[in-house]
Length: 303
Image (cartoon, rainbow, N blue to C red):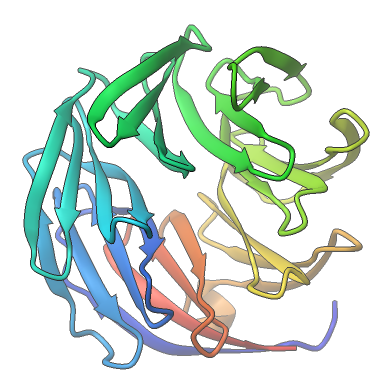
């Protein structure tokens, strides 16, 4: 593996349960976390471990999404719906009752919020006015992850039916069904140029798909020992990271799909339990990771 220097800069604590999700803000140095304790917390990379409680909800939170144009944080409240938080004033400005299932992922496209839930439904929500525009039943089991390609006007949906489905973002017609995974698909990520889609999940395989070629499978890598929970690209698009239930974070070369570094407890004082979510910040190129161990770690990776 390449010589890459990894140092752990900080550990943020404050959540009382597993941390499931991380999300950016309009500021490179500020990000949000959501956890099983129902808390949404903002963190500042310039002020280590000084978290501020933004919202407290009765049920766990798997999905957060920052709406840049409205400067609001959309919070997926499991078994309830979506809450819209003015995070700077710590105030809920709107909410929408949506589902009695878990909300696993939230993304947006133009003026629409896109929500995937445990009933196998993707819901498109108009923001002005706030209302459900369309509901799309895409799976018999859970919708676990969503990725949007604005360039190709496509929506990728990963499900617990072991499938990835590609829809037209405008008319919601099904364009492709990808069935190469052998278990639930937990994470999808388009490359920054949107020419490649990466997928991973419970089968611990990392798969790369050629978008322009009609989602032809380019590579299939046994990437971790256990389920892969998340994939995130670096700000410059040259690298990406994966994290897993095997407690490790792995750093990859994006062009060659080559493993460059393993970050774990033994070698880098990494997480002691499942690593659930990653966020690669533009602030000093710091990598942020969240885990079942109730901690958020901040990593400096030098190539």
